[in-house]
Length: 404
Image (tube, rainbow, N blue to C red; front, side):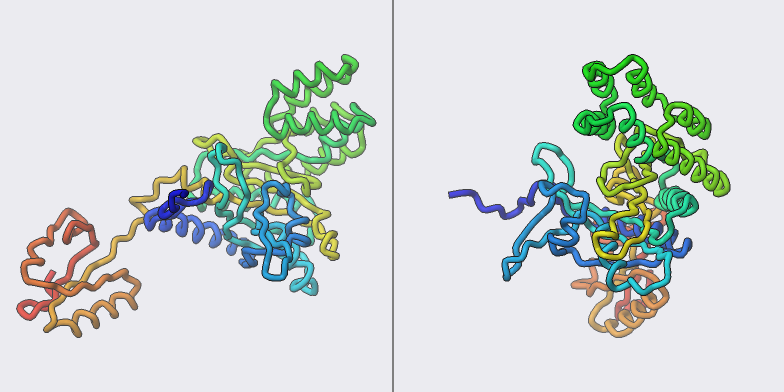
């Protein structure tokens, strides 16, 4: 008989204890406040969606979707990202609203993972979607807002790498015309950042020395504004050149935002979602080896919901930011505890209510005996009472009401 799973959790899921929840809520509050100051309004969508709509529209592979059946036998999914659900809402409930729409969110999302991968199956994202504007100005706005949001979250050292799906597509279409499988294999190497594997694969494709060099030089197309100029000399393909010209325009707007110190152009980056159609970007914190923010343009996603509109956006991986920040000291707000005996109950509770209305956190506790007051120990700016720290301890007793 299998052992009952009394305290175990499914692989990839975690409990958030009070100290971690405080940090998570602090990040959420600051980032959503930053987004609101840029004119983005918060939206909430259901945790569960229909597979045939949001599930199919999502770029998450079927193998990574959490699927279940409702009582009518209809296949449902737990949302794997927020972009597809918001596309559904924009195409239905908001379809008559004037464009562009600026929407923000904070939500948990679900992706099934391999047990040995050590990754989370449920995690939190805070992000935005800018719908109805296909310009370079819009792309630059979401990048600049991503930078502002990371700073609001408390991340100081980071880099945003921007690329464009069209550049790589155009380059490979010319170099590997009629060889879609080889194109896909090279893209997969770049997506996984396996540059050694990318070079090895190039050597096996029996390409001319000129084309092989052109595709190998792609790995060097990383840097600042000069990268755009170098990339224009690499390919004459119209799709690739249009992509680079768009990135040049985005960079010019980012210069106006005065944020280019945080940005680099990386034309090896293609984004890890299939619905991206243009500019993509990822943000890496200095002390973490994987992205804390990612986003890009997805101009065809809303077509599937019958409401074509260009769109761009990003998601901050809020749960990963928890790993970077030590907010315990500057985020922890200790409550005051008011202790009282049965003769001073009313006065003590009235004081607690008044303090709460003034914005203070207050706990009340009835004394079981006068000896409990002896456990109050002042410790600098905090007070210890029965082994726990408080901002202060106020005692209401028959002998001394309101004494500290």
